[in-house]
Figure (tube, rainbow, N blue to C red):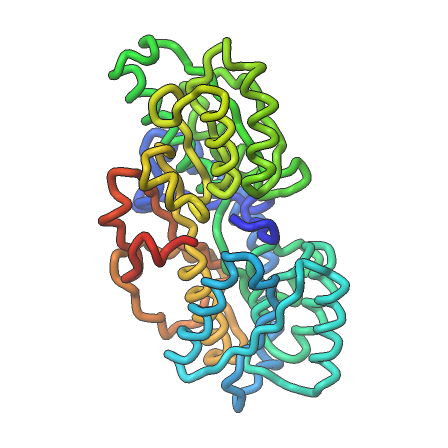
Length: 389
């Protein structure tokens, strides 16, 4: 997860099915009905309005234009490289217009592009804020079908967005919760936790007003609600290693005597700082305390050294592949998407791009990564070193 990134998940929880390999049976039964109903209700407007963008498709263009956050963030370095390669594979080229996580800068870039008179095949749009996305999506939709990525599509923007592609942060949180339950069982087997003890937990979250954090928290709580941990503290920290270290270094001395069994961190970049703070306060991750993480980006060294029990692979490479494929499929189908949600399978081999028009919502595949499986991990022909930053 990166600082510019938000989620479709908080306002549109995901559908769960028995065939979904990402979901554990223990919480599949608990969440399927309620979340499916909420998700379907939340997607109907976007699905219904997607046909309105069809007349704006330019059949003669082979250029995709992407308005994106800056490649100063390592997530986007990987994303842009993969997006260019994927576009070329399908006979398209992609023009990437970066902004420095600055809404005013992005607004100006979009206005300049509109004034140029260009009519691309499709637009990939990663807005700086969900609220500002509405007017930009409206204007861009007059030029070409819009694929919104990264941030959730607000109801006010649904008339202008042909399709959404991204991750489901509710599932990220649920998968982290499943890892935490496994970690507790392992601690009991090793004699580090008594049978029947819930285990003490500290959560280091994204900022309070950041909706992806709320989704990851709710997913974790849902996954563990039948055997909840004792939450010593939920700390709204930030996104990066500095925020993780400062928050953890303040909290750990306060709770160390209570016994800290599990630490849940929303992303691995922040976990780098949390692990450093644990170690500076005399605790050994992987021995004295277990660390589970949402997004694994930034955590390669922690995983390979066994300092993280497990994390969720949310790959910028796969994110980019799906965004480009969604744009290409929209262009080939006159800007049309079909109603529904496509949860893409986490297969080892790269699947062929479907010929059909895309669904109005495409959710990227997610996998767990642990110190035991990272070397053999394979997703869409990519190994561990290429899946995450």
